[in-house]
Length: 102
Image 1 (cartoon, helix red, strand yellow):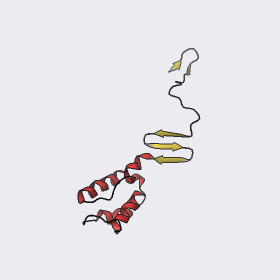
Image 2 (tube, one colour):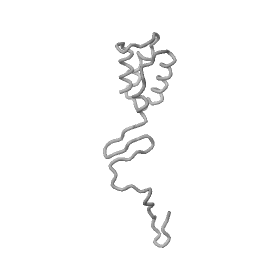
Image 3 (cartoon, one colour):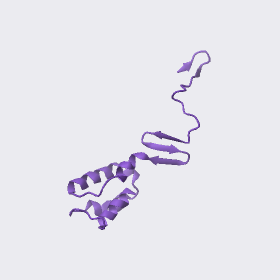
Image 4 (tube, helix red, strand yellow):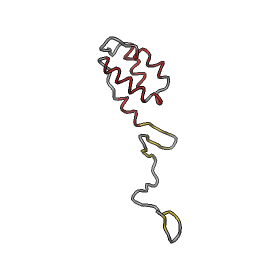
């Protein structure tokens, strides 16, 4: 919108937010010197897979978010090689599952 009498853009006061310390935009929380990907919350909420079908689903989610998971291939290798279920919370694969989620 342009103010025709002065030739300068007019502000829509309803949409304008001034003096904000953070901003939510496209799944990110942007603040001064900080960028947090809120879209990763789905990964943090995943339970340990209890079947091979669930493991495939979880690995698919991890693969989709691999951009935000540092050293993904090193962390996920034992998890991707799992063949027996359920994965107990004390097993090495469960540890790998939690390392990938962090």
